[in-house]
Length: 197
Image (cartoon, rainbow, N blue to C red; front, side, top):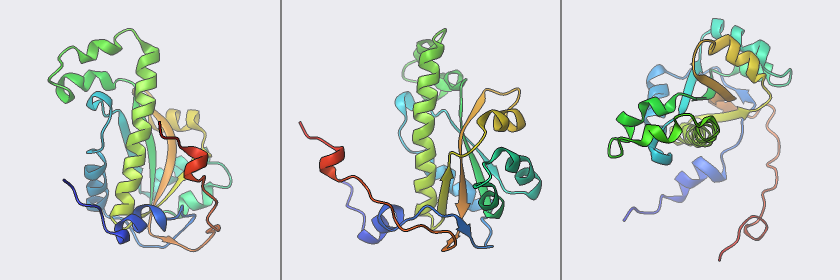
Protein backbone atom coordinates (compact mmCIF):
# COMPACT_ATOMS: atom_id res chain seq x y z
CA UNK A 1 0.00 0.00 0.00
CA UNK A 2 1.35 3.47 -0.87
CA UNK A 3 1.94 5.76 2.06
CA UNK A 4 0.24 9.10 2.46
CA UNK A 5 2.43 11.94 1.17
CA UNK A 6 3.77 14.32 3.83
CA UNK A 7 1.80 17.52 4.39
CA UNK A 8 4.69 19.55 2.94
CA UNK A 9 4.20 17.77 -0.39
CA UNK A 10 0.44 18.26 -0.34
CA UNK A 11 0.96 21.94 0.48
CA UNK A 12 3.38 22.40 -2.43
CA UNK A 13 1.14 20.74 -4.99
CA UNK A 14 -2.29 21.86 -3.75
CA UNK A 15 -2.86 23.78 -0.53
CA UNK A 16 -0.36 26.63 -0.74
CA UNK A 17 0.34 26.55 -4.49
CA UNK A 18 -0.94 29.61 -6.32
CA UNK A 19 -1.72 30.59 -9.89
CA UNK A 20 1.16 32.90 -10.75
CA UNK A 21 1.02 36.08 -12.82
CA UNK A 22 4.58 37.33 -12.19
CA UNK A 23 7.82 35.51 -12.83
CA UNK A 24 11.45 35.64 -11.79
CA UNK A 25 14.16 35.70 -14.45
CA UNK A 26 15.30 32.19 -13.54
CA UNK A 27 15.19 29.89 -16.56
CA UNK A 28 13.79 26.36 -16.77
CA UNK A 29 16.18 23.85 -18.27
CA UNK A 30 15.28 21.44 -21.04
CA UNK A 31 16.18 18.60 -18.65
CA UNK A 32 13.55 19.86 -16.18
CA UNK A 33 10.96 20.23 -18.96
CA UNK A 34 11.61 16.63 -19.98
CA UNK A 35 11.38 15.44 -16.37
CA UNK A 36 8.06 17.25 -16.01
CA UNK A 37 6.64 15.43 -19.02
CA UNK A 38 8.07 12.09 -17.91
CA UNK A 39 6.11 12.42 -14.66
CA UNK A 40 2.92 13.66 -16.32
CA UNK A 41 2.78 10.89 -18.92
CA UNK A 42 2.33 8.34 -16.14
CA UNK A 43 -1.11 9.71 -15.19
CA UNK A 44 -4.08 7.56 -16.22
CA UNK A 45 -6.10 8.12 -19.39
CA UNK A 46 -8.94 6.01 -20.75
CA UNK A 47 -7.56 3.04 -22.65
CA UNK A 48 -4.09 4.57 -22.19
CA UNK A 49 -5.00 6.73 -25.19
CA UNK A 50 -2.60 9.58 -24.24
CA UNK A 51 -3.94 12.28 -26.59
CA UNK A 52 -2.24 15.13 -24.72
CA UNK A 53 0.32 17.06 -26.73
CA UNK A 54 2.50 19.85 -25.33
CA UNK A 55 4.41 22.51 -27.20
CA UNK A 56 6.93 24.20 -24.88
CA UNK A 57 7.59 27.77 -25.96
CA UNK A 58 10.94 29.00 -24.63
CA UNK A 59 12.65 31.11 -27.29
CA UNK A 60 12.02 34.81 -27.88
CA UNK A 61 11.13 34.02 -31.49
CA UNK A 62 8.47 31.49 -30.52
CA UNK A 63 7.08 33.82 -27.84
CA UNK A 64 6.74 36.55 -30.47
CA UNK A 65 4.64 34.15 -32.55
CA UNK A 66 2.46 33.24 -29.55
CA UNK A 67 1.94 36.71 -28.09
CA UNK A 68 -0.52 38.04 -30.71
CA UNK A 69 -2.88 35.17 -29.91
CA UNK A 70 -3.04 35.94 -26.19
CA UNK A 71 -5.60 38.30 -24.69
CA UNK A 72 -4.27 41.76 -23.84
CA UNK A 73 -4.29 40.93 -20.13
CA UNK A 74 -2.39 37.68 -20.61
CA UNK A 75 0.18 38.91 -23.14
CA UNK A 76 2.66 40.63 -20.74
CA UNK A 77 2.82 37.72 -18.30
CA UNK A 78 3.16 35.28 -21.20
CA UNK A 79 6.18 37.18 -22.50
CA UNK A 80 7.67 37.37 -18.98
CA UNK A 81 7.34 33.67 -18.13
CA UNK A 82 10.34 31.46 -18.91
CA UNK A 83 8.14 28.75 -20.45
CA UNK A 84 4.73 28.87 -22.10
CA UNK A 85 3.10 25.52 -22.77
CA UNK A 86 0.46 25.20 -25.44
CA UNK A 87 -1.69 22.46 -23.95
CA UNK A 88 -3.10 20.55 -26.90
CA UNK A 89 -4.53 17.19 -27.88
CA UNK A 90 -4.11 15.01 -30.93
CA UNK A 91 -7.24 14.16 -32.89
CA UNK A 92 -5.33 11.23 -34.42
CA UNK A 93 -4.49 9.71 -31.03
CA UNK A 94 -6.23 6.46 -31.97
CA UNK A 95 -3.51 5.69 -34.51
CA UNK A 96 -1.18 4.98 -31.57
CA UNK A 97 -3.58 2.66 -29.71
CA UNK A 98 -2.13 -0.59 -31.15
CA UNK A 99 1.15 0.44 -29.50
CA UNK A 100 -0.26 2.02 -26.32
CA UNK A 101 -3.08 -0.45 -25.58
CA UNK A 102 -1.61 -3.69 -26.98
CA UNK A 103 -3.80 -6.12 -25.03
CA UNK A 104 -6.79 -4.96 -27.09
CA UNK A 105 -5.73 -4.93 -30.76
CA UNK A 106 -9.16 -3.67 -31.86
CA UNK A 107 -9.18 -0.56 -29.68
CA UNK A 108 -8.41 1.72 -32.64
CA UNK A 109 -11.66 0.58 -34.26
CA UNK A 110 -13.66 2.18 -31.44
CA UNK A 111 -12.90 5.54 -33.02
CA UNK A 112 -13.05 4.69 -36.71
CA UNK A 113 -15.72 6.83 -38.37
CA UNK A 114 -16.88 8.19 -35.01
CA UNK A 115 -15.68 11.79 -34.92
CA UNK A 116 -17.86 12.72 -31.94
CA UNK A 117 -16.35 9.97 -29.77
CA UNK A 118 -12.87 10.79 -31.02
CA UNK A 119 -13.22 14.48 -30.14
CA UNK A 120 -14.81 13.78 -26.76
CA UNK A 121 -12.07 11.29 -25.85
CA UNK A 122 -9.24 13.52 -27.09
CA UNK A 123 -10.55 16.58 -25.24
CA UNK A 124 -11.36 14.84 -21.95
CA UNK A 125 -8.12 12.93 -21.70
CA UNK A 126 -6.08 15.83 -23.08
CA UNK A 127 -7.46 17.98 -20.25
CA UNK A 128 -6.48 15.29 -17.75
CA UNK A 129 -2.96 15.17 -19.12
CA UNK A 130 -2.66 18.97 -19.04
CA UNK A 131 -3.62 18.88 -15.35
CA UNK A 132 -1.07 16.13 -14.72
CA UNK A 133 1.58 18.30 -16.36
CA UNK A 134 0.77 21.21 -14.05
CA UNK A 135 0.85 18.94 -10.98
CA UNK A 136 4.18 17.52 -12.18
CA UNK A 137 5.53 21.06 -12.55
CA UNK A 138 4.50 21.95 -9.01
CA UNK A 139 5.99 18.69 -7.73
CA UNK A 140 9.33 19.69 -9.25
CA UNK A 141 9.33 23.09 -7.56
CA UNK A 142 7.90 25.11 -10.44
CA UNK A 143 4.88 27.41 -10.51
CA UNK A 144 2.04 27.50 -13.03
CA UNK A 145 -0.20 30.14 -14.52
CA UNK A 146 -2.88 28.51 -16.70
CA UNK A 147 -4.83 30.84 -19.01
CA UNK A 148 -7.86 30.40 -21.22
CA UNK A 149 -7.72 33.96 -22.56
CA UNK A 150 -6.30 32.80 -25.87
CA UNK A 151 -7.32 32.80 -29.52
CA UNK A 152 -7.28 29.07 -30.19
CA UNK A 153 -7.91 29.37 -33.92
CA UNK A 154 -4.92 31.68 -34.23
CA UNK A 155 -2.69 29.36 -32.19
CA UNK A 156 -3.77 26.37 -34.26
CA UNK A 157 -3.03 28.22 -37.50
CA UNK A 158 0.32 29.53 -36.23
CA UNK A 159 1.69 26.38 -34.64
CA UNK A 160 -0.35 23.34 -35.69
CA UNK A 161 -1.33 23.97 -39.33
CA UNK A 162 -1.19 20.74 -41.32
CA UNK A 163 -1.18 18.59 -38.18
CA UNK A 164 -3.84 16.77 -36.17
CA UNK A 165 -3.03 18.69 -32.98
CA UNK A 166 -5.55 21.17 -31.56
CA UNK A 167 -4.82 23.75 -28.84
CA UNK A 168 -6.83 23.79 -25.63
CA UNK A 169 -5.23 26.48 -23.44
CA UNK A 170 -1.86 27.98 -22.55
CA UNK A 171 -0.02 27.63 -19.25
CA UNK A 172 2.95 29.70 -18.12
CA UNK A 173 5.53 27.75 -16.13
CA UNK A 174 8.56 28.94 -14.19
CA UNK A 175 9.45 30.35 -10.81
CA UNK A 176 6.73 32.71 -9.72
CA UNK A 177 7.01 35.88 -7.70
CA UNK A 178 4.42 37.93 -5.82
CA UNK A 179 3.75 40.32 -8.72
CA UNK A 180 0.06 40.50 -9.53
CA UNK A 181 -0.76 37.77 -7.02
CA UNK A 182 -4.41 37.99 -6.01
CA UNK A 183 -5.72 36.97 -2.61
CA UNK A 184 -6.74 33.33 -2.69
CA UNK A 185 -10.29 33.01 -3.95
CA UNK A 186 -12.87 30.95 -2.07
CA UNK A 187 -13.41 27.27 -2.81
CA UNK A 188 -16.63 25.29 -2.52
CA UNK A 189 -17.00 23.16 0.58
CA UNK A 190 -17.42 19.40 0.42
CA UNK A 191 -21.12 19.81 1.16
CA UNK A 192 -21.55 22.25 -1.73
CA UNK A 193 -19.67 20.24 -4.34
CA UNK A 194 -19.86 16.59 -3.34
CA UNK A 195 -22.15 13.78 -2.39
CA UNK A 196 -21.70 10.30 -1.02
CA UNK A 197 -24.22 7.58 -1.86
